[in-house]
Length: 341
Length: 291
Image (tube, each protein chain N blue to C red):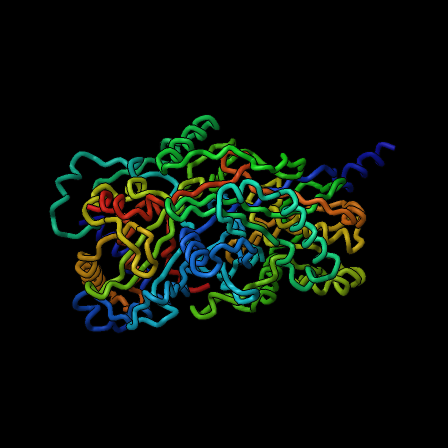
């Protein structure tokens, strides 16, 4: 009996509920300028959605800061023609520019977020998200631009499907499971998956939008291979191999994964898995030793019959409220003249 | 001169002697073609740097459309220049004409632990409010119809975005910078432009940017001007009038020690000396020989 207890302690992961570090938005000033021009020249009084492509990358492990979810000057683009820097991963979204502060305020935001959640859920159920994992990171942006004072009020929504009952083991360093050689093999294999190069010419630096932020890892007889998400059935049915669901993690924390894992787990639920091994892929150039592994116990696929989405971004003070950026100090020519010597 | 020589010596170790272009060697200046060549090497070696095309209306015809200027984004700036101490004699060094690299001869940098940090949540909140006030913003406190989310899976620490996390919750205020390098046709040298964000990702104004520039240069060689490839936005710029002279000096010193700088390595040398002006902005200019 005593031996039995020890065995139980050793072999079983202790499961607990999981918390995810939310995305952190970062809007380049050049985006605001571009958006202001776009509003004046093209949108005019229209408050329709405009396609927008954001991007993020793995966490900065040197400084232990999360990567930011960026929109920049090139974010307003046509679908699949965006310019995403190498090692960054695109996320499709839309921006709605309101004409008045009242319109921004009165806009029914809960419905908006719920609709984003429904879109994510539909992309999961139709299989579209397997072919284009970026659909899991769909986002929305609401803006009121006061072009007279260069003050922008904005609010990001990063919809995540609610998964009640989800439990996971503690994050462990990848080195507990993968040898140094296997880590190197995984890093190489992922590089091949995302384009096959470690060096880029300047022309190649901006790609048409890498779409491998979520991928699969198969370990067969010590051999490690990164596979696209679209090979799901093939990978998970490959006999006595170890299979992992992996994602490029914008979070640097030792005990928590980043936001993109949430919808990826929702996808895993619909594929009928009861448990899944996760790799929080955290590369630092070719070194992936800061990556983490955990095991998740999934609720059934029925959680997606009535999908519920959460994910309004909070302000830096932690409040559920829009953010404001005031570009007047950067734009006002009188102020500029005073600062310049 | 010791620090300059040791820096040159250190730099020389990175470099392999190959032929140099004549104007670069004699005057420390670059042609646009050489700027592109040097930029290509920088982008290859330090992938955090990228080429940008900028606005089409502001395009320079003497540079390729997709290689108008270089940029590296979100460069961390962990502490303010004022946290670095100078010893008494340093002012005497100001007016010699050895270029910028010698003016900090007696500088001593405090170790990280000694730097003032905003350590408690309350202080951080005060600092954030002060930053917001400086930027002329009213803090928004209005959820505009969004119901508080019932989401136990959202890890929210009440932390601002770019706050480096260290063990024991030892928080460091982290500003970030976008650093651009354009080609200045008049001076025939690269020119550096800075745009900063505070730890809450609000743009920094000119006064705040000056806190991150060596005080010897803040109001002498660094000014706030419009970016040449982006309309309307003011960047802090390091004026390039002394760049070629300093670059010439560096190249000469390398030559004296038997090393010749290649023209495509220009930007590595250049960024090394620019780091004297913006010592706390940790952009990448490491010259890796391989991998």
